[in-house]
Image 1 (tube, rainbow, N blue to C red):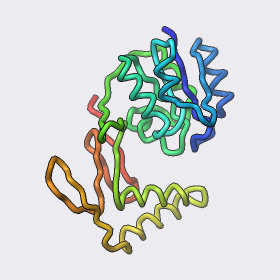
Image 2 (image 1 turned 30 degrees about the vertical axis):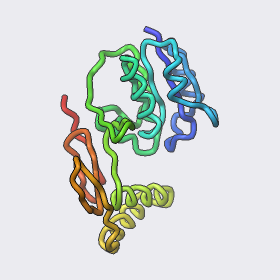
Image 3 (image 1 turned 90 degrees about the horizontal axis):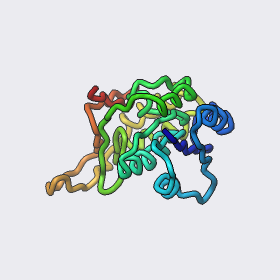
Length: 200
């Protein structure tokens, strides 16, 4: 089986390096494309002469490649090389050993649920409103301290007033401070800020 791994070198984790990922993938016969500014990852995945598509990066880097893999009817390989790697965690991958995930190019395919909001695929969830704001603020503060980021998110949940979004869901008008669309049961604990439960 021929495979292509698309690497986002700007993903938050930065461990292992893009060079390490390239060497490890090439050792097992997987072609690699390291994204450069201006590259269109979807176009690269669509045009690839490959029997499997993989993405190395965070959750935002994975979704477009997974979308093309579904479109082309190809297996998708997740290599957790981002900051949070929620999809990798929920899929049972070892987020501390991204190189081990490359073995999936020679592994057994397992179906998982995905979802769409409008025409955009998501692997775990899409959030709007207050929850999205909490995640964004947590990510901006994470380099200072994980604990500080969680405390700031908790404080925002207590202190923020108003901010309800006007929405239409299934034709029904709705106002809500948090809208979370998930592809499976989802844990929305304040300190964990979520995790999907995959059907296995």
